[in-house]
Image 1 (cartoon, rainbow, N blue to C red):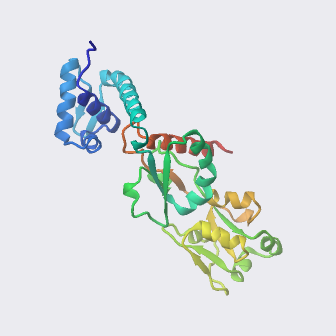
Image 2: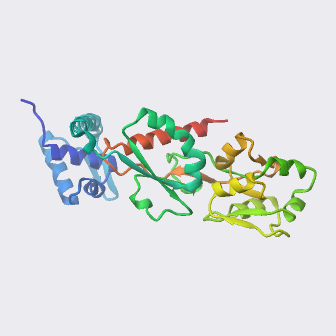
Image 3: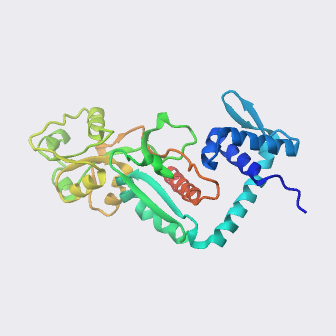
Length: 298
């Protein structure tokens, strides 16, 4: 006969250890904070060991808790996997990702095939946000444009964005001998509206006056702005991560002397608030690895 503590105590301990919070563990386990605390204390009593150090500002795993957690998490994951296999198609497999439309279109879509090929049973729902996603709170994973100075050091992110001035290649070649300010005075500007005024950031850094003789074209996302620029409709300023595929395919060209470095970056702003066996963690870990590849690229 196996000498095992109650399963409810193990679940409460594992969830509280991941969140370092009885309150967050209670939300995940759909019970009260008091119930989680009671189950953990019951487990500690069973083991005659203290698993957490309780502090006024939160929880901290004790040395015993740190040693115990990996085995408990692995056992729960194995039990969950066995249950998933038994339940088959009834197991929820959908992972919802909220991210800017331009990130989904211009960065993520070209990379998804590798993940989906290796994880054919996971369904991904992409919520493409323009400016902000009203349903972001319902997503398992969120990608946002953030200022790097506001993020924790361990937050997965792409490198800080460079603002690029781009247009159709033929247009760029025909204007290569004219001063940048004169070019912009007589050309259509494609303004990407949103939370971060990239044109203004770019112009302020370079001392450029954005007033001109040609009415602007205004769009609500960079993907549309880049396509408009590729169709020779004018100049657009956008993030380097977004214009990379257009530059690679030769559909637009960039003004190399007019690049502006920023502190803005695309970041994974929180790990999934799901049990460790949930497929959202696979998607999150894959995205984290892809972000790290971008960071390590010269």
